[in-house]
Length: 121
Length: 107
Image 1 (cartoon, rainbow over the protein chains, first blue to last red):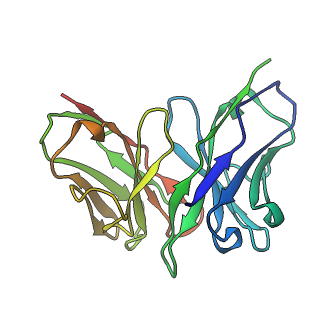
Image 2 (image 1 turned 180 degrees about the vertical axis):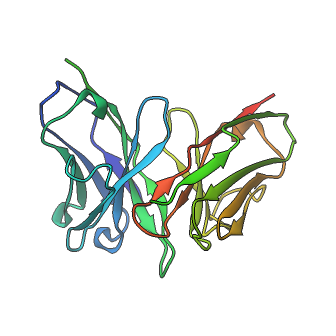
């Protein structure tokens, strides 16, 4: 059974750093890209970026480039989303999602349960 | 960036009604469009990929159509368990984006 299990909720102060994780199981972790998706309170879904776990090649949405870092450790089948300096506006639910499909077909076929990040002084 | 405009932003319908949501892309995206369902407090779930393909295990009352810039998502007979917010999402080129969502409620 394919599963993406994310790390638990976090409460941080502005300016602090944070790394959340997404561990894949039940499939070949290096065979599928992982994306991160943000959902701010009461709002819609925003694609943040993606990583190829086989070589850690990444793409970012311009809206998030430079503010977050996506990485992966294929030896432990885990992807990460990291901030070096959190802002209150980073308060949101963050989902990881596996990219399925093939040639010219891409869709998020499995999702993590979400990690709630709260940034407040 | 490609913008996806979903309408309506919310709707209320009766059990058994046919419900249609539209998603308009700001440029031609061929059939590179997916639909997701998100129930309150849950992660999104893939329903339709490549505009019209039903994901395995998804009830056949859900369907998708369209290509180019205009797409539609239909629930042929609304059920109480379909209460959720529905999102379209394109993957034509980066950055991928989602539509603003359509909240479906029971009348």
